[in-house]
Length: 420
Image (tube, rainbow, N blue to C red):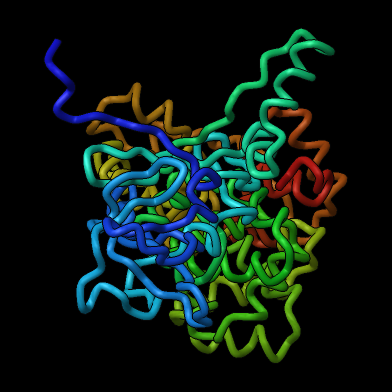
């Protein structure tokens, strides 16, 4: 039988740490303290071994290409001049034990925080890569030398076979340090989470780690997660940001969410953020801030589609295609005259079924259910329940269209445990 030219061997970090290091002449070089990896690749490559030489106090770094074999000992080539160097890290490198073992990570596939009990490595020929993190009981028992005893106990007492609980590194987001969080590959993983899942993860972390994770996110992802986060935590996260950075994030939020958040901040901090925001967005938010949070004016958003009566269906749909990502509501379109008086409403479904050249004036429903800017939350809730609308327009005493209340915005006030 022809031997496999690319033998593959799986190892755990716990099986390598502490091993004696002997060179080809049998000289004792020390014991393994840690492994150095480069996180630039999808499955990080081990670049070196950190060890402490006999009688030495300063850890040394050995290039991984000097390692010949891993058994009961770590066999290496005879060290050459320049191989034995202080254990400093280069950009994009980290120490496996120090940075990951016993640390928290996010399983971005399952959207939950877990603790790393061991690390699973794959050796192919001379290279060694990190492929999985072990978050199971078996990994913890392996670390303390009780793996076999625990397996026998579970088999005898519960008739259960203890298995590894391995998570692929490609779906793992480490939380060990701000530098690691800011790596592009890590940011991409966090950005793939649903904002509600990301908000749950942020809320589970301690205060310091929560701030590190939030500040490592890109502006758009941070804004989406912030909208889903508990209001008290929102305040804490924004208070720790420079006004310019905070304004970039808040500008990406819906006007109503932004107004709620700024209204909870100390006035000096809120004013500083508003000054940094784009003038048009800041004006929209300021308009919402003057209304009590539990009245229609405080619940509404000003980010919704409104058109003059002569607009055609084709023109309206083209507008929605271009601006949908910037609007809080797209399933209702509102029709108003030049003075801003509300004339009618049409649904997105109406537009999709209509002739592209039809006018909104002919398509709109002129029998409009609306609320005044001072309407209380209880009355608004009754209207939502009666008509089963997804959103309700808000008007002033002269029937000027001031904003729109979505059902979700109402829910956040009436039943906050369900709204977020």
